[in-house]
Length: 84
Ligand code: SF4
Image (cartoon, rainbow, N blue to C red; front, side):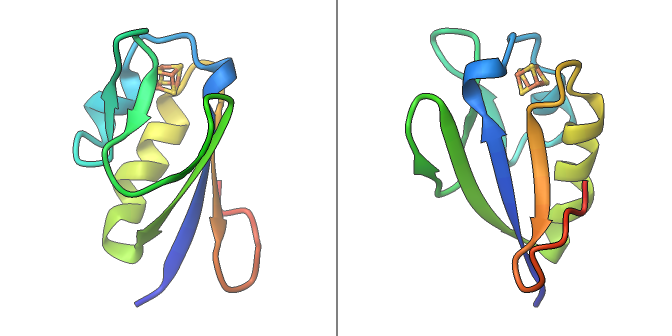
């Protein structure tokens, strides 16, 4: 199954939680009201990455689209091409 890398600029997150509504199986809000991956991820408080599969793509893409500050980017893991 195709895989994608989600790159999340946590530092730029302003809360709100639109991403959580779009993809509740991938995101939640933490104590600071910032989005947090609830799937396996790597990174620190500033920048985080997670790998998702094809079946999660639509929901995560929707979360990237609705994010008002565009801090969620998605790349094809194989080609490196930006999907959103
Ligand atoms: S939609 Fe964007 S700004 Fe809002 S919580 Fe999610 S990542 Fe943060």
